[in-house]
Length: 385
Ligand SMILES: Cc1ncc(COP(=O)(O)O)c(C=O)c1O
Image 1 (cartoon, rainbow, N blue to C red):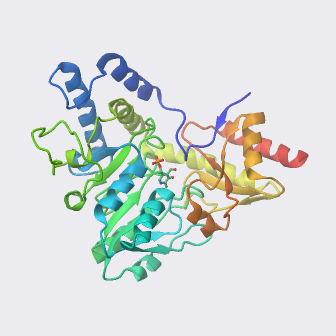
Image 2: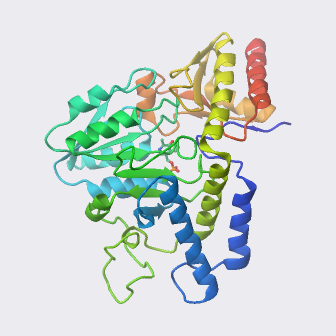
Image 3: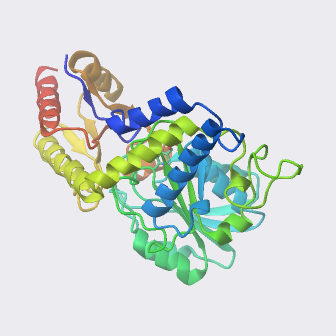
C-alpha cells in the first residue's frame, strides 16, 4: 500500500538526511552533556548548542544569539512567555483562532482572576481585522499574542499590521509561528516582535522535543523564569542566573535534538524559503481545486493560497470524519487528522464545533501525485458510500 503523509501541521514526518546524520553523529561520536564538563566531547556538545543558537539568531534576524532560548516545544516556550510576563491586573489581546498552547495558559490566568483577556473574533474564514485589535487596546493592555497562521484552516494573520499596532500602543507582541517557521519569512526586527515562539519539529524539519523563543532584551529582563535549576554556570550560587540564555534554560539540554534542528535550518536555507513555500502552496492549490470539484465536500477557510498556508480543512456529507480519516489511512495509506486539532475556539469561529474537521496539511516532501491520489480516493469513497 502507498503511504501518503498529510499531517505536516502536526509534525513533519519526513526529515532531510542531514538532520538524521547530525543526530546520529551526536549520539555516536559525542554523546556528552553541554556546558557540564571541560573534556573535549562536552565542549563539542556545547558547540552544537551554541551553533544552533547562532543559526537561529541569523535565521530570525535577532541581534544576538543569547536572545534565543531553547525549550522542549512551542507550548513550553509560550508558557514561559505568558506566565513569565503577565501579572495581576494585566489585559491581554488575542484572537479567536488560537491553538490551546495560547488559549489554555491565558484561560488559567484569567480564571485565577489574575488577567483579563479579549479574544478578538475572526470571520468564518479565520480572517482577523486589525482594526478590531486596535479598538480593544486599553490602559492596562500589556500584550498582544497571536498565531501567525491557523492550524486548522491555514489562515494567515496580518502580522505586519499587528506589529505596528503593538508598537504604537507600547504592547509586547508575541507571535506563535508553529505553522509558519521554516516556510514563511520571519524577521524579528522587521515584524517588531518582542517574542517569537517556534517549534522545531514542524516546518523547521527538526525532531520532536525542540523549540523555543526569540526574545527582546527588554522582555528577557522582565520575564520571570518558570523553571529553575542547574545551568552549568555560576554553580556556587543557589539562585537562578539572571543572564541570558541561562535564566531560562535549566536542566540538561536536548543536545541531540538541537543537532538535528540546526541541520533542519541548514536544509531550509539551502533550499530557500521561497522554493519551499511555493511548492507547498502549488500543491495546496491543486488540493483546493480538486476538493472544490467533488460534490458533498465543504472546504473551510479562505480557499486562497495568498491568504493561507498549506493546511486545508473539510467537512464531508454523509461521513463521520473520524471514520473517514481512519479509512483513508487503513485502506489507502493516506494519513490525515480528524477532530478539533487542539483548537476548540477556532472551530467555534469557523462553525465546525464540536464535530471538528478532516484536515490535510501538506509539507515540502509531498508530491502532486500524492495530492491526485488523495483526491481520487476521496471521490471513490464518496461514489461508493
Ligand atoms: C498554532 C500552533 N501553536 C502551538 C502548537 C503547539 O505545538 P507543540 O506541540 O510543538 O508545542 C501547535 C501545534 O499543533 C500549533 O499548530
